[in-house]
Amino acid sequence: MGGVAGTLFALWVRSGFSSATVASALIFFPPQPSYNLTKDADGSIMVTHFDDDNREYESAATVTIVHTKAGNDIPCFVFRHPQAKFTLIFSHGNATDCGGMYLRYLSLSRELKVNVLGYDYSGYTCATGNPSEANTYADITAIYEFAAAHICRDASKEVVLYGQSVGSGPSIYLAAEKPVRGLIVHSGLLSGMRVLTSK
Image 1 (cartoon, one colour):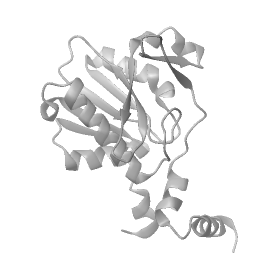
Image 2: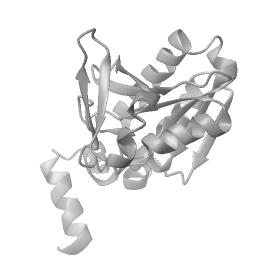
Image 3: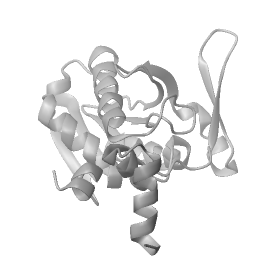
Image 4: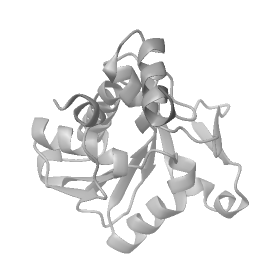
């Protein structure tokens, strides 16, 4: 047995016959980090971009570390707009991080006059834990709860979820679990588990 089938079988054996682990290995591709986080003397979190294009905009967002129910700590980049009536929670694609998405988040906030919350999945860049379908659900739930507590007056009327590629999974999950204003699915994917196990 060789080729794709052999590779999938080897992944399945190495994972202890866990379809979820194989799905995560095939779906999530954390990139090389494009930013670093450090704490300032007053305890605020500072972002340092490795890409020169983003450096002049480093102060455009505040960064908060959000704790998930799965026990992971994930960075949340908050772009506030003074005229915002809505808050966009953006779940990015599988091979990028918030540093790679930084200018897009900033542009969305400015052009649409909305708050934008971007976050990295567990196991990506500065986030703890491992990337998995279950962890993405815990990640987006924690971001929604953060938005409800600190950004929105009424999250059910103000939060719009935006899921791109692999980010469509957690966005659709949250839209089914929590009241939101809207859902945007951009190049959505089926759940990795359903692709591998037909469930």
